[in-house]
Image: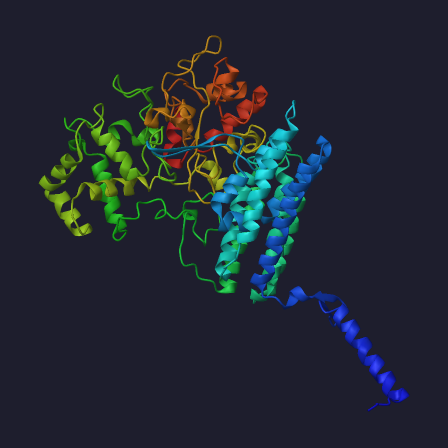
Length: 614
């Protein structure tokens, strides 16, 4: 049977077929009311869009590293590296949030990493990742095969992430990772921490701001107040404009004061606008609007999780009393306060306390805001550190049972511990009360803090320049991280770093010999850890002389001169594993004076009178 079709029917059929073809050719596109094309991606949920963008950027990063491996010319390798690096920095907000360990490995400095769980489990990890590639690319004698080897391993890790990533974010995760990234920019991003050769930290921070804005635009439907989104767009552009500057003369003080503070305040408003609730708080409080503030930190995170936090104010008061109680030592002659004198910012002003001690007494102000204790990092908590003091023959020279007996025999202590703690005056509870007191000694009440928070405008040009040098050209902040200015790496505050800087046995720049104290090496006898010491806070440093683990330097000027020369190697000490990120700083005398002037602004109000007498 045949069917006959009229001309009109043929015309209609042709139009239908043409419409079908056009529809299928453009099946990924529709037209908006404004005549703009909207891709099929617009039909995805915000989380699906975020994951798609994240994985596409990951792919571009490892594809560029693959291209690098195919090159035989150095300059073309650099081009591919720069493309890969830009993609990596663009995914930094998400990757650093969902996979801290892989992010840290991919962005690790070109230094051997030693992992010491215990004496039977010591791992020596050789670095790879973007910083290692960057350093190898710009060495005087370039080993192209070594560069390709590291690039291959880095690309392989990125591919592994690409094939195994599934984002499972709630709305609060989005704001959490953005706030973390803002803090990372302020504390490591603008300091040169992870751009060792190209020195493009400011440019990279601009890329990240663009990515943060992109993420917020993906979630634009979450905003009930459109002005908040507009405010963020305006602030992003202002930050990018401000960052368009050369590294050495960039004004980090004004950037943090005028932009980072603004961004944190905006994030707090966006949290309220979105109506998000956080299921947990880690190192930083979600509502924090100023980074250089006591309110920025969640001290529970830095406390031993085993202890009850109820009645904490009373526990702190008991801990303070115990801190000053000489009965805790076997001879009833020494309390914590004997060496940690409040009027001296909880130090003693001596090179070493007595002939029994080899190391200088450090301040315990801001000591809580770290993850390891003692200068060799042998204790993992303040409670654990107290054990070392109690059992040390040159200090309390006793045992933990003695602490329990002191509390048990004192009616006031006994009643207090029986009331405050479920198990009463155990040694663990006694140590917790003392540690709780120490955790209150983070005041963020210095001249610098008040100025960067915008509460006063009293910094001199020299003091501001000192901060900008510290966090820029002088590279101090690549080890002493703001806002605590110690070695605990923000924004997660999970790890406290140790460094080998080559401290001499005495103040000698002609015939210098390294201190005989081997530091961290003494714990596990790991050769790669010889002369490694924990990076301390420089807060209140102006009133806590002498300096270094052996008290070798008496003034801040001497300390700055030591670093300016290039640490131990700069004064003739052979230290192959020295970790300073420079050979020497080439700071002028004026710049060195500015650094010292800045450090003096970090003295808390309680200790300023002593500073004025110095």
